[in-house]
Amino acid sequence: MFQPNEVLVADSAVSDSPKNYTSLPADVSPERWNLHGQATFVTQQKNNFNSPYVGANSLLNSSQGGGSNSYTLSATAFLGTQLWHGAEFYFNPEVFQGTPFNGQLVGLGGFQNGELQRGSFSNPAYYTARAYIRQTVNLGGENLYVASAANQLAGPTDQNRLVLSFGKFASLDFFDQNSYSHDTRTQFQNFALFSMGAYSYAADTKGYTFGAVAEWYQDNWVYRAARLALPTVPNTQALDFSLRQDYIDQIELTRQHSLFGNSGAVRLLYFHQHAYMGDYSAATSPSLATPDITSARKSGQTNWGYGINVEQTLNNDVGVFGRWSWNPGNTETQTVDISRSLSGGVSFKGTRWAREDDSIGIGFAVNGLANSQIMYLQQGGISPFIGDGKLNYKNEQILEGYYSAKIYKSLFLSLDFQRIANPGYNASRGPVNFLGLRAHIEI
Image 1 (cartoon, rainbow, N blue to C red):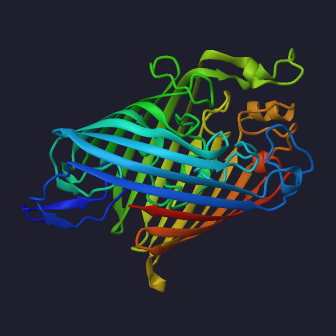
Image 2: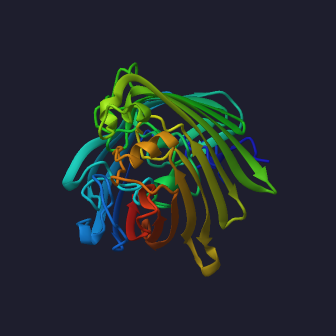
Image 3: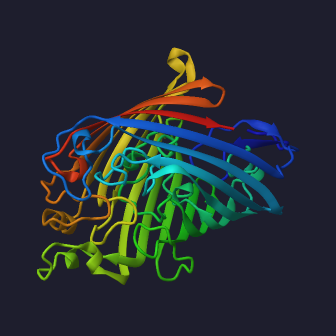
């Protein structure tokens, strides 16, 4: 038992992932402000895969002009300050530069680099990634002390608490967390592995949204609810800041547990979208010579879905994770073209070979589409991210493995390999192999 003059220490007050705690004196003063930063560079190459024909949204091989490499470079500053008791403000200026293989993000259900944005940026582009207020209301329970981190001021907090956040941030800052597969800058890089593939979360072209999130931490449970802004036109930069026309409502329930002395967690997510979107069935109307999803767009369209996310520590050095997600796939997506997805994997620390800060990850994902979108693509339609002109449908299958090595202090280098069979759900194409190198530093 911890003594009354001691508190528990956790890595983050926002994260609900299971933690290992140590004791610290209770008189540690709260942090008034902090500054952290990160920079990540990813470069990838692909093989000259089989590609007998192409459409407007096909991933091209090298012979077809698909480019010999793709890269991304991001740099972020994380500034935080205390406003009043329990209230904090966080501001994240960010710079991004990079380009997909085709010069545009197309050709796959699960894209190979989660840092990629919907566009090509040959010159550095500056923008505000996050700017939001967080208010914490303590409700008792175990006394915790939260360590200083990016977008987290150090200080004491209660295990049971209510946390309210409002402003601009990323949906995945709060939802679909996982200790072993959640951060593309340090873990798995594929879209279908670092998050639920069929979770059509709110995001502009740079991956951020605007809205309000409420979190209730109670013993081993965490309840989250949010209303977040969707783009006024699918897959564009302009968000509906009114939160009344184009938005997503979502809830998530997390249960933390201990299994044979090892920590784990189970998360259940439900989301419901209301937005200006196109309907695939309407887009395949006999009156249209070539199906066109943009011609079937109208306001007030709805989409919904759910996901299950689990993680389990097996021992001090090994952990496993798994996700299942589904949506009906009747409307065009707000994120990636995936209607159902099963993923999982295992993560190892390098303790056994005297490299405890190194890690190895091996994961898989199987992605599928709904029948209405399959028919649309088979008739020559183009969806936001895929469209080969015709489709020999088969589930997209992804295998990813990486080794992350600590080089010096907070500098890590990772070697990443991905093999994607049936890219863009087309059995006539691929498989595609991606070999990547990632450099990541934090301060």
